Every structure is written in C-alpha cells, then in structure tokens.
Image (cartoon, rainbow, N blue to C red; front, side):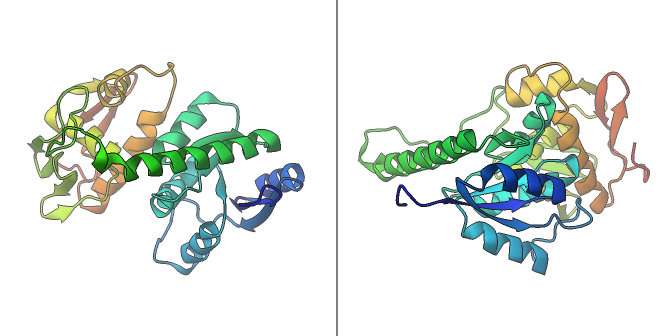
Length: 267
C-alpha cells in the first residue's frame, strides 16, 4: 500500500458509534459504514445483510465493530470470515476492562477505545498487518527448518486435548474438536468446546468461574471479568437448539453445574 494512501475502514456500528469514528478518523482513514442488524443477537451468515457486510469487510484494511454483548455473535461471525486475512477485526469498547476481555474472547483481534484515537488506531492496524506478514514469512520457511513434527495438537494446561468425554446425551471430542447432543452436532467455537468438555467431565459438580479461568485460559483474569458468562450464554443457546435446555445451571455466587438430563427450562 502506498505510504500516502488512506487506510480503509469498514465500520459496523450504530449511529452514535459511527459518528464518533467519522468525526475522529476522517483525516487518516477512508470510512464506510454498515448498520448493525436488528435484532443484534441474530446473525444469519447466509443472509443478504451479512453478505453485504462481508463484501464491504473484504475491501477494507480493518473492520471496526461497536462492542456490545448483543453484538458478540456478529463479532464471532466476522472473525470466522476474516480468518487468515491481514485485516484486523477491532472491537470499539468503553474503558471497562471486562468488555475488552469479552470482545477479544469471542474473536476480536484488537480492542480500541470509543471515541477512537485515530493515530493509535492507525498504528494498531499497521502493526497487526506487519505481524501477519511476518507470520506468513515464517510459515513459508517452516518446511526448511529442522523442526520436530507431531501428529496431534499440543495438550492444554491439563492435558485434555485428544480426550473424549461424555455425560447424559452430551459427547465432546477434543481430538476432532467436535461435540454433539445425542445425534445432533453442537455449533461451538474451539474455546467453547473446551469449556463444555470441562463441564461434561465434572457433570454434577459445581465449577467456579475461577475454575474455568484457571483451567481453560491457564491463568487468572482480574476479579469481575464476565468472559466465562459470555461463553456460557452461547453454550446454553447451542444446547437449547438441540433440545438440551436447562442442562447448564447457574449456582448463584458460586459458578456453574452441568446436569445430565435436560430440564426444559433454562436456569
């Protein structure tokens, strides 16, 4: 890209967030907008609205999405669409740390304050693209390096990768990273599959949020983060869609428990 060219942003946002981006970034970026679809939680990746957004994203140097918990499915869908491309997916967040953690957890590459700081935003986009370019160079030369090759992905902090766990109608296989409820597949991200596997292998027992943070992420987040709750929301929705409503119970003040029988009523 020529040094003098304006970077292109695709901004998926409501009126207020779009106005903030447009006012702040007009001199450093060429900005185009796509409205957030209503209702926010519903994202049909085969629908006309998402196809329009995906086309706009494909021609941008970066995609900005105004973060809200209702937009989490959109961020996840765009992350899947942009996987393997150099253009970062950036969530526009308030200064609340828990919002930033949640946005990164569902698929954002970067988080940025709202209203945006245009010089910092430009530096983030360029740094991300530079990192992806260096990664591509490393991958291209990997076959020439004397590295050991193994036949399976590395195990996580507790060695769960490669294991198959079952409880009631649920089966989670961390070798193939698949899960099913009875004969029906569950549509979950790899991280959500690990969370569900932990629930399944501890069915009937209560796991605290710290248990998930320590055993899935491998280290402690600041107290108060809602990243576990965000992922649990999508796990429950996937289970409900397969007739397993109410299997994940919230134990107030403690954490979560998986029951082996659907209750028909979400906890």
